[in-house]
Structure formats: structure tokens, C-alpha cells
Image 1 (cartoon, chains in turn brown, green):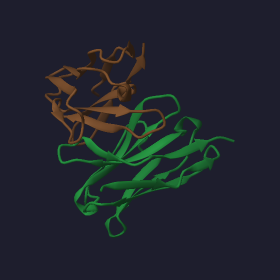
Image 2: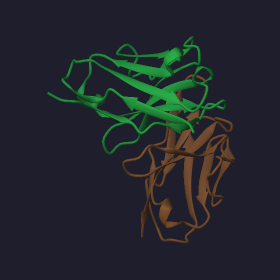
Image 3: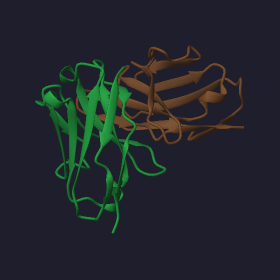
Image 4: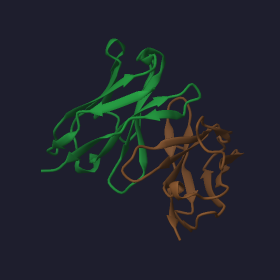
Length: 107
Length: 118
């Protein structure tokens, strides 16, 4: 099974900071990767799919990159609404695997 | 507007059963694969099971196969998760999510809490 590993597990940052979260796959997965944002007590929300395609309605300060085994989610200028937990997810036709999550906290 | 509404969660004793439902609206349900994802308290997301648009293809997480059964009724715009032999570590919020054409999850319900405790 493919394992997804995110780093860091927790990230402390300030409003306006540029933030980068990394997700590594245990095997090459091409660009079959999505990123989700989850706020406390709420359902996850899709941000990015196919590694770099921004979901409709998601602010352009969010971007994704990478292919193969290493991927990044970047928030270009952190806003108060962005403090949340972020998950990467590998997908194929018959299984879906999430990373363990990265919590973005206020510094 | 796409809406997914889960129901059926609650408190159940170890070894018991529960059936979750997810009712969809705002899109042509019969053309989308659907799935269940769960999240234990304070933990990350775990994919549980998926079902294709016609119900022909069904997949489960390895750790759950044999105890959980996914099904759907396209006439009722609903997907179900039958959970048997429940254990304490099945305690979680269970989310229903729609699978987009490129296989990511583009819409999620609000979740329903399942608590397994004596």
C-alpha cells in the first residue's frame, strides 16, 4: 500500500507569512494528489486536485505543485481564515490514502 | 447546490450494529461514485469504503472488509453504510463524500457521530 507522509505535523505562522506544507508518497503516484482544508468541527473542504489544479472558489493564494513522490501546498500570504488542518490525499480507482495532517497554528 | 446529509449515527454497544445513511441533492446522484470517510476523535481522516455509480464496483479499506457493507439506492438518492461487530475503535465521525470524475472528493456531508461504548 502507498503511504502518504506530511511534514511538518504542526506549523506556527503569522498572518501574511508564506507557508509551505510537504507531502511525500512511498511510491510514485504521478499527479494523483489532492489537498483538503479542515477547520475544527467541520467537514474537510477540497482545495486542490491533480496536484496543482485549484478547485473553483478557492482563493488564489493557495497553490499546489509536485509530481511523482513529492508534493507541496503553498499559501502565499496566510490569512486569519486559513488557520486549520490540511491533509493531502492520494487517489486511484480503488483506494484513497490520506496523509496524517498538518495543523497550521497562530504564532 | 450539492448537499450531502448523513444520518443514523449514535451510541451503540460493542458488538452491535448500525446503519448510516447519506441523502444527496443538487446533482444527478446516479452518475457519481460515492464513499464514506471517518475521523476518530482528535485523529486524521481515514477512507472507509466507496461504491460506483451503479453499485457494480465496491471497495473497502483492508482493515474494515468483512464488517462494513456499503450500498446505494439511486431511486432514493442515498448511499448507506451497514456497520456490524462494532468496536470501540470504530468510534468516529463518519462523512459521506462525492467522488469527482478525477477521483478526488469534491463535496462532503457534515458528518454523523458514531460512538461505540458500553
